[in-house]
Every structure is written in structure tokens, then in C-alpha cells.
Image (tube, rainbow, N blue to C red; front, side, top):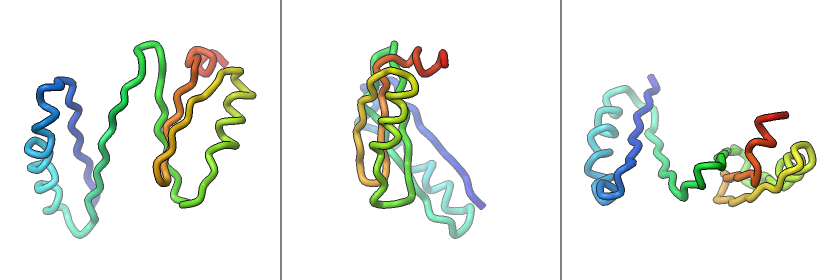
Length: 101
């Protein structure tokens, strides 16, 4: 059976304790069965007036550029993209353009 745990640390003083705080949650998940545990760390927050989309693709050699080009063309806003393995983070210059169309 699957399960999800999460930890959202807003206090920078607790960042050095992440492993200590997260470990008991992962241990609790081991009793749920043979499913593997996965985890992700997110950071690099964006300005308050922006939105960030983090997407994952199961295909290893996926090209994110067509999606970025489509967003730029459809919404008329530049899109900053950062890729890491099979995931990408997209930050539109003008999120209001995305939300209003």
C-alpha cells in the first residue's frame, strides 16, 4: 500500500535538522509494505509575485523545449527553464498571463 509523508520547513534554522526530522517519517513508511520509498528536496524559491512549476517526465531523453516554446507562444510570456535529469522547473516571467487566459 502506498503512502505519502511531507515536511515543509519554513524556518531556516531547522534546515540543518532535516534528516533528523524526516527520518522517523520514512521509518514509519517501511511498515506499509514492499513499495519503495522516494523522496525529493525542493528549494530555490521564487519571488512572491511569481509561480514555479516542477514537472517530471518518465522518459530519460525528454525535450522540454517544445513545451516552453508553446507556453511562450500561447501566453506571450518568457519562461525560465531549469532541467535536472528527467525533471524541469518552469518559471514564467508573468504568471498572471498564464492565469488569465
